[in-house]
Length: 261
Ligand SMILES: NC(=O)c1ccc[n+]([C@@H]2O[C@H](COP(=O)([O-])OP(=O)(O)OC[C@H]3O[C@@H](n4cnc5c(N)ncnc54)[C@H](OP(=O)(O)O)[C@@H]3O)[C@@H](O)[C@H]2O)c1
Image (cartoon, rainbow, N blue to C red):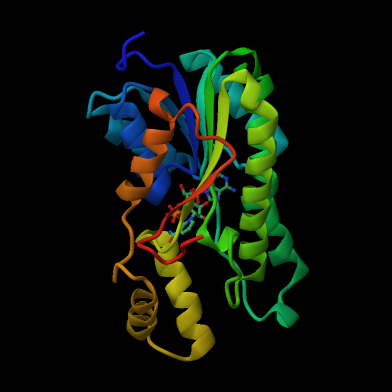
């Protein structure tokens, strides 16, 4: 198999930001990429846009909070592109506030979307997707630097991403003898629609303008700027390569120096 004849890769939450750039990169590497998000129209549009670049991309709507959706989605991916070789668990949401005031509903939804989904999609890909029977595979979970350090007013988000890092380390060790590597990529601040929503949330909470929140965040980053979705996708692409075969059970930052742990 040459580098331009890869098999099926799944990317969740691929209609925007990091998931979209990751899909573009994997398709460029020759993967047949099957994508999802909740909004059907956005999935169709994304597939159409990427196909004009001659890429092998298809997809279906799927809410990663639903076992039934995820089962159907992985089944559809296998029917379209064959057994799964690479899984990128990217779908996620922000969410937080003053912890004493957070609704249990918000807490549960953040954990469900960011953490339980990673277990659920991974399990479906190992079984329905056939990954557990292959001698090589890649599972890459998009966590966050908030999965390694606490974030003020972000307790549910930070707890969910710490959970993703723990799951990654555990499964990475478990699957190491099988040739399947499992790693977390931990972005810091990345300019995407989610990042804009996060700035809006802090602007409201602190009674400041979004511009001053942006300046405050930029000042915390040694590089002085947000990372780009393409910079995060670049590490995902590397982790899929043969050269990365001995990297497993790790949580690697792409964060302009924000976290050095
Ligand atoms: N941007 C950052 O600064 C940053 C930093 C650290 C980590 N991250 C992580 O990186 C990942 C991607 O973030 P992003 O900034 O690229 O976000 P984004 O631009 O908001 O994109 C999120 C994607 O996930 C999909 N999605 C959301 N909930 C879903 C669900 N329940 N089921 C299926 N798809 C769902 C969205 O589409 P629909 O809404 O149509 O479902 C969209 O395609 C997330 O896990 C996030 O926590 C981001």
